[in-house]
Length: 118
Image 1 (cartoon, rainbow, N blue to C red):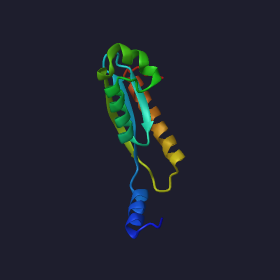
Image 2 (cartoon, rainbow, N blue to C red):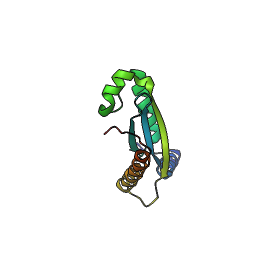
Image 3 (spheres, rainbow, N blue to C red):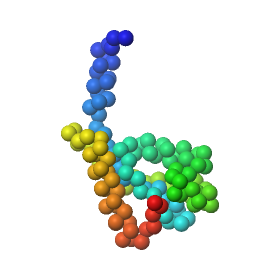
């Protein structure tokens, strides 16, 4: 099937769109424990969180016990910091940079006395 000029333009625009990742925190408001995530797709991560809350299924196995005890409504989703992917950066390099940023946030929050899910 041949692509029309319009389809080619749409595909080019999609490939050239800016990609923004983020460090996200899912926090149990009862226990105060936090799951830090390095996400190359924070909008998708937020959708997964909202789906987990709506189905009452834990987002991550590490938080399953607290999820069952407190319910999904006790958890909040926060985007802590965003990072834009550089044009010359590979997906792997971008993910590594996000993970480094997540580790920096872990140190900051640990200094404030936060506890984390592992």
